[in-house]
Length: 245
Image 1 (cartoon, one colour):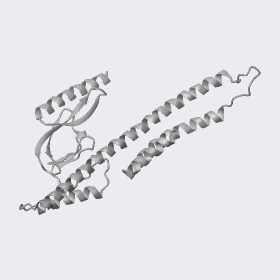
Image 2: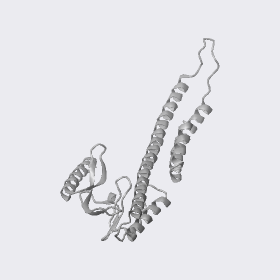
Image 3: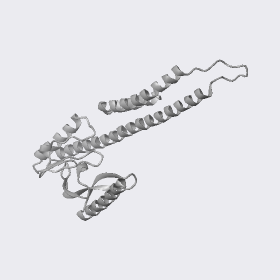
Image 4: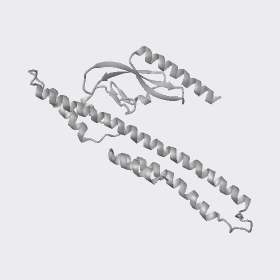
């Protein structure tokens, strides 16, 4: 196990989000715990005989074969664990990048507030400034997690980007876009958190040809969404038909 790598990852995560440390800890423990029992078994079950007269170690062929098989199993387990660990590290790195982007937005908001305060604009900006300050304070006082926390009372219809998740609770819709029926299109009113524009996007589940993965996506036009939904439904049905045969 690369303890230095593990320590550096944990330190990196702890500096940004304490809650994510457990994610790395679990992945590392999984890798370590898989390796230890197999190594203990090899050490317990097998010993190398003393050197023979010809200078070679005398080990029965069947023991060698069994030992090699155990080593293959160990190697496969370690590779799988390494993959788990790499995925966890990648997930936390991706999360941290998103958190930094959000904090950059907060700084922009603060700068806007100060600019308005100093401009001496004759317009009544008290409410606008109050909203901006409240938003900046809220984002500074709360740690970022995998899902950005937004008070429902402040939002009508809203969505976050594909990497952060989505929740809809409007006009009887209650669920996530991942639960959309395949082949269906759902209109989603699109509003920025600081409303600079407002329009309607169209959500549907799309087909990823590389790994046959189905995920949701937002389209600017209903026509494009319907086309993607139709294609996804066709590919999904074709895959299911093949599985049944």
